[in-house]
Length: 328
Image (cartoon, rainbow, N blue to C red; front, top):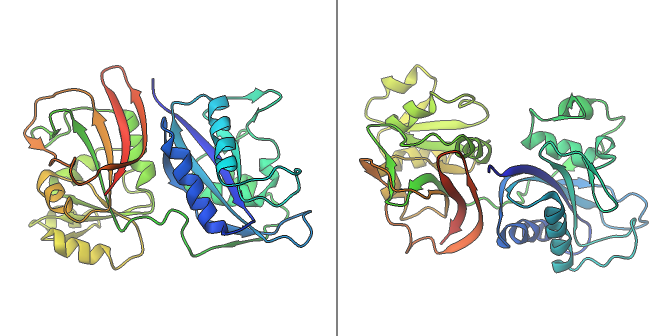
């Protein structure tokens, strides 16, 4: 069955606060059955009711997971423990605080877990970062933007330093067991969950792709929202009517992409993937567990990307597949 989209709040006001946030992301993923799909900017927030304590660094993270809500809560508590949280009281400083805010459409109230998390509609340090990664989300029947607008006060400072330390270049691809990625200029499958995750991961990034790949993107809803494109083609007139930038070579496209401070996503096709494999930092792979007919192939990545940062297995009515994040 498809993965569940959940949202978790991270906070730290002891020690190296930014490093604690980064470590929490790594620890959430490394135990398996979960991948981080979006991370908000970090905000500095006053530490209320804690006396002369350091300000908090806060963020919200979106995850895609096969874990139950209770198991995801347990994962968060394990991360807190691994990062040295000392549980001395609810209004005490802490190296790490991980709260489960929302788990799909689940409504739950038990001794250990309330969903949606209580009081989040009153907390600027949750709502403001959350809105940045989920602008279309509704909570209790109202858009997040409406909850933010209703806050009596917002007393936060958005930090310039990124939590995620995004690598400069990521490859993102869906690949069959026999390395097929395309057939006759089209994807050999239609996996809705893969497209959804692609759109969430690449939000706010610059996407590099060939003309055929771009023609496929045009068929999908929401393709133009909150992302930039550079199409690698010798026929710039074929994409100029969409207002997209183009470049004749991968190197020229990279030069254009590096002029902004956005993460760069390499999206295909085959020749572009082969060139990018030599210098990309991460591979975001959807491994489709099937052998399919095709005429375009992904290069052998096994000797390049050996370290797995996170994975989660899922399936639809036709295919099973595993989402993986790998780095050199």
